[in-house]
Image 1 (cartoon, rainbow, N blue to C red):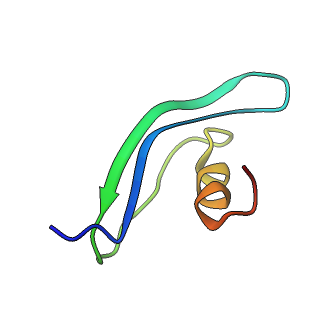
Image 2: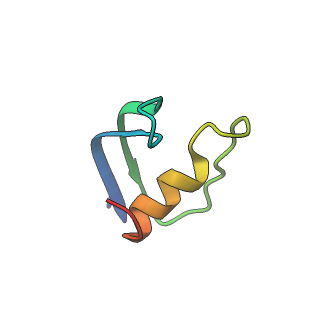
Length: 55
């Protein structure tokens, strides 16, 4: 499988230190993918990290 996007052991937290996700590892091929989760679970943060908007 050719991975269009690969993340390895990615973690993120809110400014107050609350963990959003940790140890995220994934490889995405060129296909449609859905990202679902509860409000405040880090979906937008993950996409902003991938887009390079936040580090």
